[in-house]
Image (cartoon, helix red, strand yellow):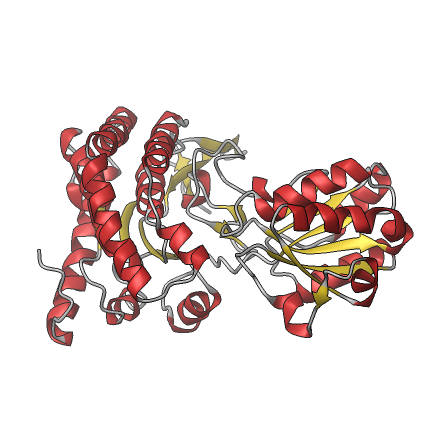
Length: 427
C-alpha cells in the first residue's frame, strides 16, 4: 500500500474506513484466539526485530536525517533514534509482554444469588484501540504487543518524524501475527503522514472503542477536544522531587540527579526540585553542585540563586515547563504543605516523589498528592510500566477514569458480567 501522503480526502476516508472494518473483523477473530497463539505471535515478532535490525536501523536513519533537516530538538532526536541496544530492548519488551499472564477470561469476582443465579465478573478486551503517538518508534512495538496480549485489535498512528522506523517495526509485528496464524490486521499502522488521518481516527466510534494518545500537550489537547471516542489522557510529565526536612542528604542528591539526568527526554524525568527551607542551608548547595556537575542547568527562585551564583533566575513559566532537557527549576518551600500546594498548582498529576526519613511525612505526601504515581525515596525515572513489572506500557495515564498510571495489559481490558441460570424468570 502506498503512503497516501498526497491522497485526496475522499481516498483517505476510504483507507481509514477499510482500516476500521479490518480491525473490527480482527477483533472478532482475536476473541477466539488461544493464549498460546498470542504468545507465539509476539515471540515471532521479537525474533523478527532482531533478525531485521539492519533494516530497522536503515529506516530509522532516514527519519533521523529528515529530523535533522527539520531542526528537531536534541530531546526529540534522542526519542527518535534507534540503536542496536534499543532494538534489543524493544524485542525483549515484546517478549516480556508475551510472558505475562493472559488477562482475558480472568474471573474478577463470582457469587451466587438466593434465586440460584450464578454471577461472574470476567475480564474481556476493550475492542479496537487507536494509539496516536509522536517521535518514539518503539511505541509501535510496545502498543502493538500490549493490545494483542489483551485481545484487542490496534490501529496505530505514529508521528510523521518516525514514519519509516514505525513501518519497519510494524513489518515485524505483522510477520509474527502471520506466523502464528492470526490476522495481520490485528495490528495495523495508518499508512500516511497526513494529519487529516488523526481527525478521521478520532471520528470513528463505529470502529474504534478507545483512543490512547501519547505525545506533547498540543496532541493531547487536540485529541481530547476532537475525539468522539473515549480517551485515555496522557499529559506531559511535570514531575517533582521534594526534599523534606528529614531527608538524608546523600540520598537526596543521588535521587535528584538520577531523576533529572538519567534520561532527560522521558516523561518521568523530574522537572522541578523543591527543597525544604529547614534544610536548604545545609543541603541546597550540595544539590546544586551535584546537578551542575552532572551537566544540568539550574534555574531557581531567590533563595536558590542566593545559594549559588551559577543559578539563573526562574520565571513563572519555568514551573509549568516540561523541559525534556538537562534543565531543572528549583524552589525553596516552607514545609510539606507548601510543597504539596506547589505540586497541586503546577504539576500535571503524573509522578511526584518525596525524599524523607520521616515515615509520617511520607505517608501524608503519598495520601495527599493527587498524581497517578507518588513515590517515597525513589527516583521518578521509575515511572515506567516495565519497571512496575507490567512488561511494557502504552503510556502513563494522568486521568482518573478507567486507567491511571502505566497503561499496560490489564488496563487495556474491561469486564462483563456472565450470569448462569437454570430457567429462572423474574417475578
